Image 1 (cartoon, rainbow, N blue to C red):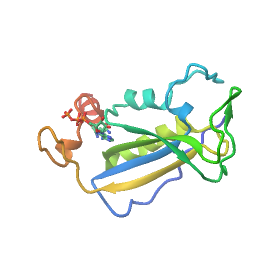
Image 2 (spheres, protein in one colour):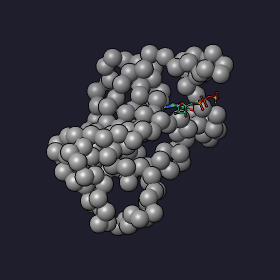
Image 3 (cartoon, helix red, strand yellow):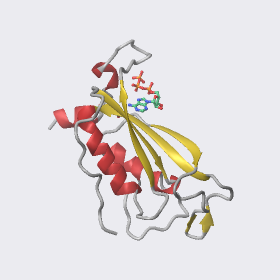
Image 4 (cartoon, rainbow, N blue to C red):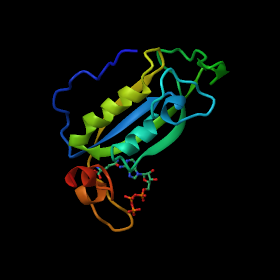
Length: 155
Ligand code: ATP
Ligand code: GLN
């Protein structure tokens, strides 16, 4: 399976300090499922994101309908859905602007099979981040202890 990357993007509009990367993906590409066989061993998306310093992630189980037309998704002989909507996972990751492309690359790398139904990524500008515990806003609230910024500034 050859690597396909997201095509290069012009500057995001509207410009923002933070963006939410919202990805609708195949559930079995996000987290390791014991019944899943893979062609080559690789960390699934959630582990891969943790490894790069992503600490804040929101995940929901959703059901969707797209170009896949709700056709039944099969993998390793097991059915993932029986009705017109296909079970997907929605991952929402708020990151600073300079981290967006890295997160998109990682999603492309780990979530792509090349088959219809791989999903879609939406990029949403985020006006502010407020940490409820402390009342911090902006960069201070968006930074996570031991997160990407900490890791890169420690180098
Ligand atoms: P604290 O230091 O007070 O624990 P925190 O910044 O570590 O604050 P949490 O309170 O642990 O954040 O976050 C609560 C929930 O918010 C998480 O379980 C996750 O669903 C979501 N979340 C936090 N940060 C992000 C982020 N950057 N992107 C997406 N979801 C996030
Ligand atoms: N940008 C944050 C940091 O560098 C991480 C954000 C996240 O984990 N979603 O610490």
